[in-house]
Image 1 (cartoon, rainbow, N blue to C red):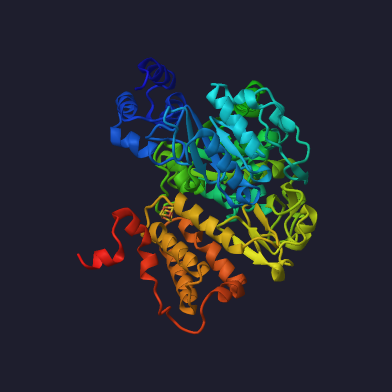
Image 2: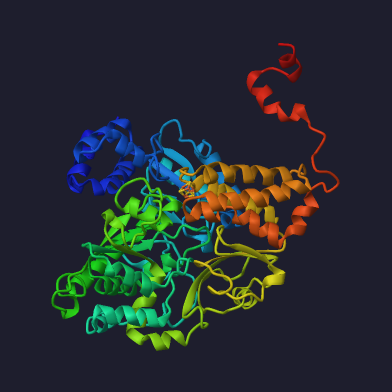
Length: 603
Ligand code: SF4
């Protein structure tokens, strides 16, 4: 039963605009631990939507639940680095203390245990989100204490005794998260005077701003590397108005956490980048799409925006420029990796299911609410602000001719110094491993699960668009690890995060994972390796968005770079395994039906 008074006060506070649906659902989930059919019907009525519209959205995102998820909901990170750092023991401790398994809620409805893909804390695993509060470096003993506190009805925020560094200590954040900035560079992590970039930009024409960004060779930092100046130019040329600037702050690639640190320490630089983009393309509104996992930063980001308005760096006549009106709002995600894909992000920003759109048309033509929109990554927008401040010529002195500037790397895994490194493009993987204390690595996952897993023979390769591109995730895999555990974890991630629209992505990745399991169980043959390659190519070719187009990479890149490990597991003497253990194959089914194989045969 929902308390009608609470629901009505949420609805009254949020208004009747259907574009506020995700915010309403977040509030309802937080208040009741569930989005019940009753609540969905009332929300639909209030917003003028159908119940199918509301439930279509509420069932899409990880952080909404149609079954009671507990007064306290523990979202424990499942990614491979969490596993490396002892997640399994922490999970067992939560289960033992709470008295329920992951995926379940205690019978009294107090505690729900849920697994989640990546909460952006790979540098301080194992980690969990509990009622929006981040817990890092968990241990089994700590898990037991947390459950005791939940059973005592305590506020989870009260368990944060020691806050992390920098702005994590701010009254509006108070998180135990550490920034772990290990190397500062000149573009992102150098001192920045608020207003410096915007004040300079508005003395130029929008065309000149775009020309400067084009001259700098700034390429999108999300991984795809599309030229930012060109994107702004295409968007600004569209005849339709209004136009929008959307910042993609939904880094969800396992192993990525550098945007978290920018949002914590350099929000002014980011908001100036958004404002400059708005000036360049002729937009009046910017939207920061903030991943649900980073909701703990929202209050402070709102405060920074309020400060910028007070300084006339947002609002009417920005920086004194008559006729230039621009403001920024924050829209929240609710846990869906696919929303990092720009068209899915736009759907989500419109409070719909985060399903990628077919392209073309591209967002610069048909973006937010069907209007011209530039979607840029957090780091890209920061770099744009710095380019306006210090000049394209200066920017191009950094990095390589094809990859100008610096790149933020989120480094985690088997290394002594996990954290964020701002390095110039062109750095070799070997040099990076020396920096981070991971010299003995057997492999490095560059660019997260959708990237490339490289072995020792390729450590002289260079980080950059011309060789090894990355959105920022670098996972160091030590000599003791079983590489197939990493691949399996990544395939499970893609299966979990697929939106399910394309058969190739929805079913193909499950088939690939099953093939991997067949091989690691010792039942594989040489033709299985060929089938993996063929199926992987089909999935890439037939999938609509970047998730499906890169999802076979964990298997394909390890098969390419560690083929000997696969070949060591398969039977090379024949094409097909001729022995088949039928008893073993039906053992689970026998247990369920209570019939042996022999009994089934005689039926
Ligand atoms: Fe959805 Fe996967 Fe298709 Fe992308 S590729 S639209 S995630 S099913």
